[in-house]
Image (cartoon, rainbow, N blue to C red; front, side, top):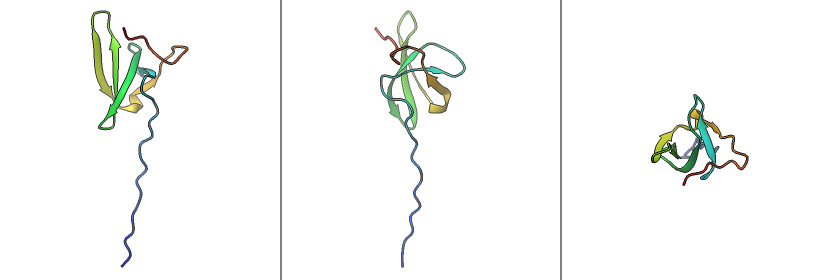
Length: 73
């Protein structure tokens, strides 16, 4: 008996850690800090503290910083 395996295409990471991104619907520039459970982890500074949240890759677009990176103090 021959077993047949079907490969499922892996999700391709569009963003790298340290890339600047923004949410498509608008919002602050954020820095990609990692990937977990298929989500892109991001951080940004809101003027008072560093915030963090996870987003689906399809919710994000590249940021418009010339170096592709946002500033996080």
